[in-house]
Length: 255
Image 1 (cartoon, rainbow, N blue to C red):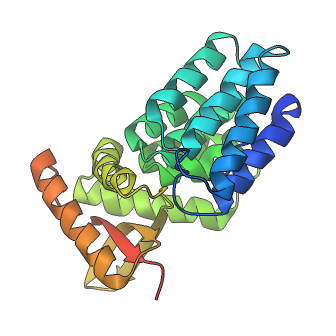
Image 2: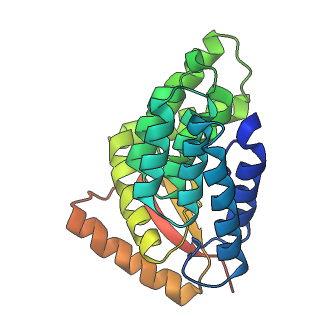
């Protein structure tokens, strides 16, 4: 997911987004590639930004560290930026980059703090809240937004309500969804693949209703199958309770 620029970091964030868009894999800064060279060029610009605006520079640092899959660096960057004050984008980009690292529980927590319509970022962050698996919370925010006369696509609101109803009936909470997605995030980081999650609703009248969080991965069908086997083992070791109403799956995105 793309980071959101503010005026002082617009060019830097756009460069980060461009490097991210060029590949579904994290950048390996130790290799000599166009993406690693771009990473180093951007880092020099970020280092120079510290002389002008430390808050913006720390935010850009967090977004930059996400390119290489450095969770500790992402945390450090955004924690330092937020400690210097709320710029709006630093709070939103914290949500974005939690998801870009596959840290869905952290993403839900961040969305809970900034996704409320009272905060003013609801429209930009609703989709990210859903991707984080915060279905119950996203619906409560959508209902509040409606009360506040904030424009919202009715079909999107209906989709969230439908997902919430299926999951609530099955007794699957936002917390359980995040725990399940966190396991998938661990496997993706192991394979150096940035998460690109696609929540889906599946309905077969009178037979099955459920929600699937699919992760397209840039590998063959055989490799995706092996990743799903990894997922099954990790879920078992993490004590994840499976439910037919909710599933997480890796899907091959190449022939």
